[in-house]
Structure formats: C-alpha cells, structure tokens
Length: 298
Image (cartoon, rainbow, N blue to C red; front, side, top):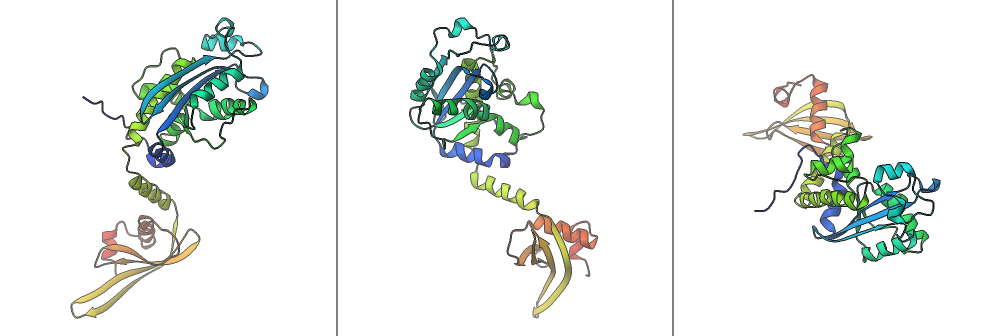
C-alpha cells in the first residue's frame, strides 16, 4: 500500500509559487549540508564536513560524505556542538581536494537543495569552489527548504524552522544533529516529501489564486455610483449601476448588472479585483451586502 502524500493545509502555497514551479520542471537535485568552523568565511571560518544526497525524479539514488581538514584547527565550541574532533579530520582531504570530489559527485548541473542555501551554498560551497578553480555555474538553480517553510507558513517562531523541527513535521526523527552526514538525510527526507506534494499541485490554479490575492491588495477608491436603466425591448429592461473608480493610480468605469447579478468592467486599463470593487461600492453607499445594492434606489 502506497504511503499518502504529506500535505499541510496551513501552508499558503501562493507564497511559494516559484518553488512549486521549480519542483515541477526539474528532475535532478543534489541535497547538501555542511559543517563549518564558524559562521563567516571573512573571519576565517572553514568548511569542516560536506555531505550530499542525489535525488532523481523523486528517488534518492546516491550519497556523498567527507570530512575536510581545516587549516586552522577546530574551535572547542564547534567540537562541543558537532562532536567532530581533530582526530576525525587528521587524514581528511584539504578543502580543495574535498570540493573537487564534491564537484565530481554533482556530475551535471542539478538543482542544489539545502536547509539554508544562503549559508551552505552561497556563503561557503560556491565561493570556495570558485576559489579552487572549479567551474561551478553561478546561475545554478537552488531550492531552500528553510526559506520555503518560512514563506509558506510564517510567524511560527524561530525554533519551528530548524532542520530538526521541519524533519519532525514531515515524519522523520533526526538523530545526531549538527553532523552533515545525518543532517543531510533529514533535509533529503523533507525535500522528497515536498517534491511529492508540490508535484500534485495544479499550477494553473495556483497562479490564478496568487493573482487573485495580489489584486485583492490593490485599494479601490469610488468616485461616483449611478443607477442606469434602458428599455431595450417591450420585455427587456436593462438595469445597471455604473461605477467610476480609481485603482492602482488609474481611473476606470465598471458596472453591476442587476439582471445578471454580476460585475463587469467597461473601461479600465489595468487589473482590478471585483471583490474589492464591490466592497468599496457597498461602503460608499452604506450598504451591508450586494442584496441591498440590488434594491437600492440610487
């Protein structure tokens, strides 16, 4: 029996449309995680460990892991956090050899996945690879599980966005955190669940919802509302409210058709959310809902 795809209704996928599009248009990914001797390369921080999992078409296929021998030793704070000691790295390759090994593992240009792309890839891996003469592509696409979670489900509190916490949310218990070889497995687990989920999303519908949300944020200013009627045949009386409005710095004209019970835009060189327009008209006329508008004498 197949496992159900993990989905979370509290996630706002309109905020991660680009991420959903990315996962629906690529097959090859490499999930990476590193340990370092500090936070800033400019202050002497070095790569201490690199681990990676290759994912192709939603399946984890291959694994890479290596310690890296730092030039300046390992601070005690890092030893206490990671458990990595000088003994672990004494026979490890230096950063150049380790990065070339990692580059060969990448093989072709995949999407780079990490729980914090700005740290692992942008701050450490990519700049160090370029320093070593490795022809890493500056335009290589990336997918950040941390950024995706924060965008789709904001305001949870800092502790909720850790790799460990996110893994637990997706049903994986991370043991031995702050070691690249275990952290990368947790990130890969989360990524695979996201890959499954995002590939079930109707992109066209998601784009429509995102556009609706964007339009809903554009305020509408009502200039005038006028009732209009015209007898077009003995049995047909056209009845409308014409609305002159301003939205997004542009003026336009819309109408509410009392026969069809729907809004239409007659003259407007822009985009407008009819829900916003309706609310603005009701507020202008002091009405509570559209049923009152239909009986409003004007």
